[in-house]
Length: 232
Image (cartoon, rainbow, N blue to C red; front, side, top):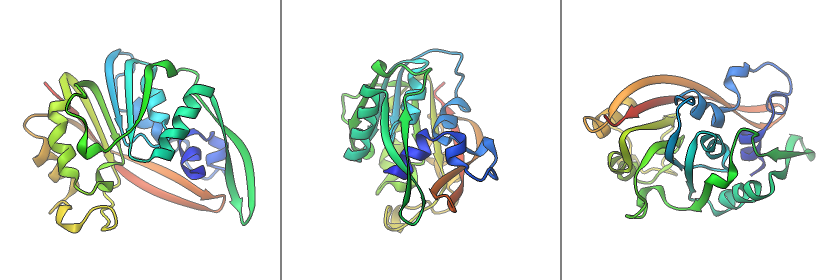
């Protein structure tokens, strides 16, 4: 939990204590929203699937009228909701061994927490009455689902005409999350194209580095593939 809170809410100096990581590779949950949407435009409804502890949901609330943020982890949702209500949440950064630094996650100043509803749910089995959305954000979720095709099949029906779908994934297919029978046969990108076209139009493909700090001397450095889709 501490690692995820740091990943979502850590300052640049907390995320990069030795200063060797590019600033542009930090703050991934914020960047997946800011770098892939026209943030000067206002949207009505947004769906944040696999929202974890909520940073991207707060970001979406700054220019969306209503944000539904769903994650399968109850403890993630409980922490996100505590932060939404209280504006700050205490957690600890692991430096090394038994050494910890106390710090606080803070609600971003530009966000509007009252617009957000955090909810425990299964991305593969969303309720039939969930409605449609102008923005769907699914960051690093697809390769963590038991049957990701179930969600891909729902996306075109969940998106309003003119809506935007953002998918990021490090394409890390692991049997502990997804049985090999449900992995893409070829590249993840080709699999997404086959699954979502022609109902959705692929607008952009890009690489998005991100870093998770386990402790001050150990990092997970990954490269997510981002695809941005629209419903014409």
